[in-house]
Image (cartoon, rainbow, N blue to C red):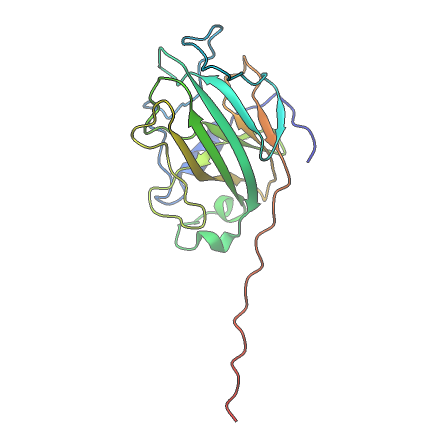
Length: 221
């Protein structure tokens, strides 16, 4: 993959369309309008754990690498420290979403990506019940919010942070990103409001596993 333009732009229409994916998408419960954009803080509001260093803003990492950032949820007075690891990404098939209401060309003509990630809370602020604060980025540098499923999706079992997610808690999960018009997934990004450069992960997106065809039954003599 090529480098990512840091001049990201968000799309309200895109966010709305993702949330129209049947009853499979729930809004972010961090606040009423679903805006999970972090509020950057110039100085840490708590002591960084011993031996932990923050990753330089604007760093470009590879899949499998970890980054530690200071994170302040919107409408929160305190920040915490999160370590993210983006493990891998796979292009999904439209048939993977069988059973969901793909009732528009927008949804049917999208590419769906399944991204395995891990997040750990190193600080003292409990982030329980929030969405994992990572966005996808497509070839147009548009941020792609993750789809949050209200019903089970075994192919990529996405989930929010547990109800209690305090210091030392960690979660491995799979995030689904919708890229319109068969668009590419070029990076995964930490959230930013534009005043701080995000940290991005770039790597090879894997193709879907081959579909196993049923074997021929042996004829009895």
